Length: 281
Image 1 (tube, one colour):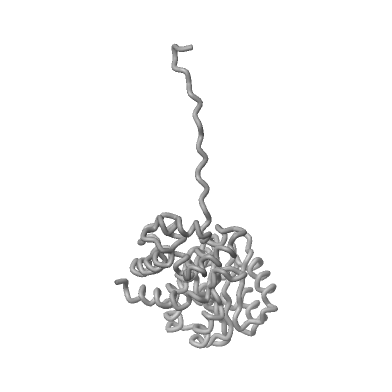
Image 2 (cartoon, one colour):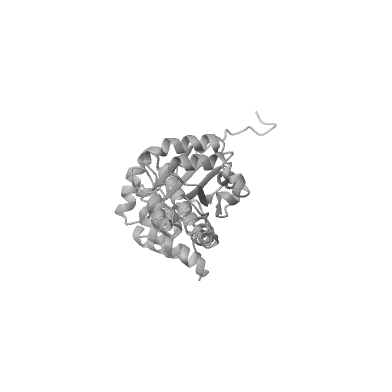
């Protein structure tokens, strides 16, 4: 049995599994409204943003909750223009995944008041405080960012974000794995999703199946998906039953046969030209 925190992560990920439909037109995604519906009332934050950005170029994908959708172009332009000066994004890019307020990340109240990121936030929605719940950092930064006006976010609110962070990071990894599955299917992505639904496979089971096709052990699958080995075993047993197989190799082959996984072309064989032994003509 995993730790209590791990069991909570498994439970939350399973509960949110249906929110990221791998067969939807836009592909699998972490829905900001579902996350914000839990976090915004508890943090007294009227607005939240789920942001993914490529640090080198500033190209970003942004989903909003409690923010006028017409502001999306402004947010994307601000990301490109100010990412090297926004204290939360800088910390994220440096690999610091600790939930933190913008005031703390900036180095104090005075530095935050002088920040162009704060001025933009005030102009956007009248908010002057921000807090970030990072999902990943480095070359690609991603975080749920919440905003409000007045008092800064306190220790209890940061503790809440730290408590839910493992679950959201696990869900983010799961969604990215499903996106890789769709990308691997290429133009047949819709057919692959239809075949998976016909077999009754859940998004979580597809994620496990994708990992099995890469030859990962149960422990490695658990690490990638952010769940326990016991949960991986449960999903593996279920997908074996749905595919009518009894081992991982058969599961991958059957999934390829049904079009759920892309078929792997056999490696080309090379024919060696016989050589004449030395001394013979």
